[in-house]
Amino acid sequence: MTAILNPTGPAPLSPPPTRRAPEAATAPIIVGPVGPVLELPGTPATALVPVIRDGRAIGAYVLSDGRVRYRRVTDPDRLLAAASGAFAVAVLTAAVAVVGRRKPPVIGAVTMGPGGWVSLRGVRVPPLRAATPPRPWWARALRARRLVVEH
Image 1 (cartoon, rainbow, N blue to C red):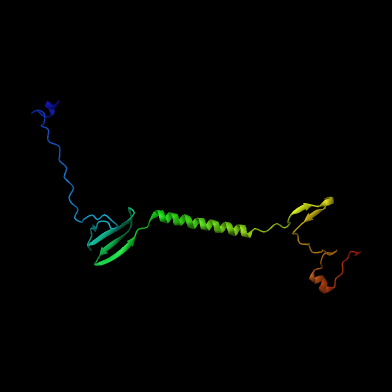
Image 2: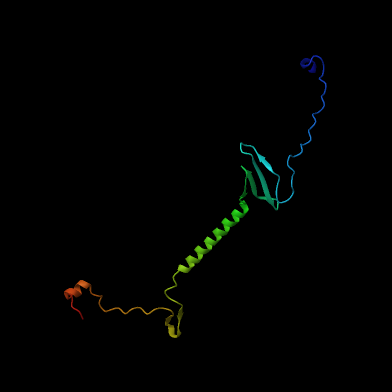
């Protein structure tokens, strides 16, 4: 089959391509709280210097137009912890408000006394009812009398 595709014979094997060694970084890599200087492409020359704590980036210095500014990086773990804490406080506050608004029972402890009588503790005495319902204001103003015989 090789003869059909390559009539002169099998192709000589070429040596495998060699890999280049990585080029040395232009900026020295500093191990510590400040990372390497990163040059950003663009018209105004801009550079970033990340600030690292405990292996995580917490911010970066931005060098642009002769000014240096510090930009914080939002930590999603802290943001999630703060949101869940605020939610827990809101739920606890709502629960205390609901429990605080509950009305106490109208009747306190109901117990059976000797002889079968019922004792109701903590109950206000109901107002006494008149034998007849109260008269409306217009009946009192007109001094009206009922048509039924009063006993």
